[in-house]
Image (cartoon, rainbow, N blue to C red):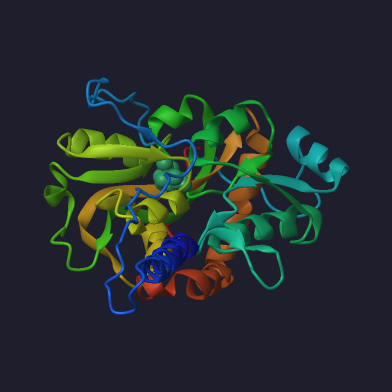
Length: 326
Ligand code: GLU
């Protein structure tokens, strides 16, 4: 993104110099023949057609979608068909985003995937396999998460995944391990101070997200551009191809940390409880993961990883309390 602007600047200077030489007289002003061309959009950008049906409030009902299964314990005695298969394989296959600052991204020095979600996955691997390093990561876009679980391409998804009734029709979830709020990211001093200011504005959102559903429902007058990843939203915002982006403030804080000219603004649009996504039917794994979450809530690990990755959101709110269905 920055490199792109740099290239444009270099091109303009080159045109200016050539123009100056070609003019004959050293005092004549260069003729600026450079034309502004819109920077290319990231691949797979799709505008949301305004005539496509707006999601209605008639989302499926399932009671409290955050109610999950009670843990049975973590020791080597804990077992079941899914757990046994993962132990036999010797590594946990985790789906996540490899470019989501603060949650799961490559440490530029070590090359390792790090962040809040990566650390949660590492704690699960620690309890299940005896080492936090026994993980094979599969990179997923937001829109790929449910299908990857339904196809059993991954054992679990640790990717800022909101628990809701619609998703629970296809996959299952751990207890809530983080509670976020959807808000808006805009350029500082843009005059955009929240969702009400997005009427008639262009907003970047990743497809396959709750953020898209809420924006279409709560601000139908916004023009939405959908992209594959949240990092793409930062690029199109920096290129001024949109006026704002909107998703969970925890993700937006990671984007704002990469560009000091942006800011997270406005009130909460919706509460987004994150759960570890697990294939439907893998109840032994659900109980096991809930055991790990129970452990890290109590032994200080949750607070430690919050402080390491998310302290720019404020002091630790403490881990969310679990809600068990059984
Ligand atoms: N929490 C939202 C969701 O699950 C957005 C997060 C994301 O795209 O990773 O749809």
